[in-house]
Length: 371
Picture 1 (cartoon, rainbow, N blue to C red):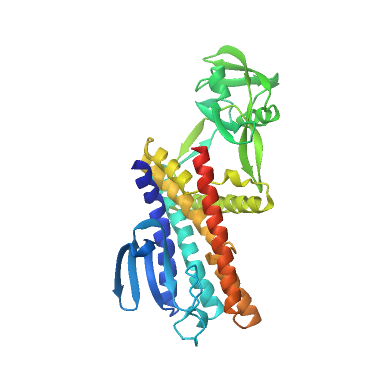
Picture 2: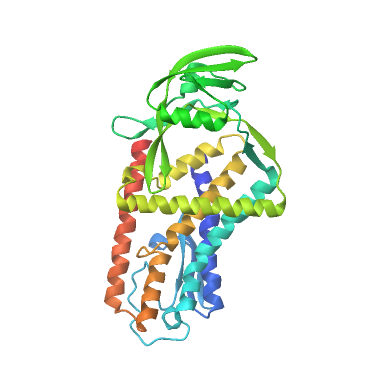
């Protein structure tokens, strides 16, 4: 139950605000909103109420939501758009009005991400890394690859070696360590190798050997292997003013958007294997584990901001069936100055539906295998 409720908590607000963005944008340019639902009302299961021209509802299945407007061929694959155009329909609007409606949900997701990060950074500040070779913490486990290139947790090399918080690294394989940056550079250069480390603890010298494991790190459009020791840097706490918090929040949201985009391109190019994708089961597992940690509510909001930024980026990509796919069609129709034939748009939507269902099934399979 904790896993389920935590999952619903972190996805509800991003989904609701996404659909609210579409709803408000539609109203602002005179597009008739036929339905506004939070959750999916499969088989008619849910609560619904008609008010004026719009049917509002809460579906029994909370993993989503949707806004249905007049005059658009959406994921419902309803072909009833072959009649004469009405002024209140999506298809009667100009390109800029269409793009405003289609992008409004994405904009709301980005605003939510920035807002949550701003509140977090303003309330608790940030930790700045001190570039000294002094250990601020030890990880119990690190992630590495097995023989099938699947992710597996193993005991951290630093834990095996007996390093502790406050220890100062002096040398690695005879190389003098002067900064935290030196540690990362030399450890990575000696990944999957046995290394000799010397360190100081309360001015007493220690030494020992440990095996540096490789850990998967998303880098650009692919996943790279990096050497990892399993240590955390010492940091200096810094409180932020509101404008600084907004600045850091915009940067953090942009970083998530960039990494998500790189991951998507990596999937298309084959550099990022499909088996590494995580779906709703994996997200629910992460949310459930997060809810049982210290400062659980804060961490769940952080996860919500991360998901909201991801949701925004994925929706604006030119994938059939998503907002970006509709936007691409609207731009093409604006360039050629006429509507595409309904059967072509129907085919595009159907292909998008099949693709999304395939990825949905694949991610669930991956999550179950990992669990």
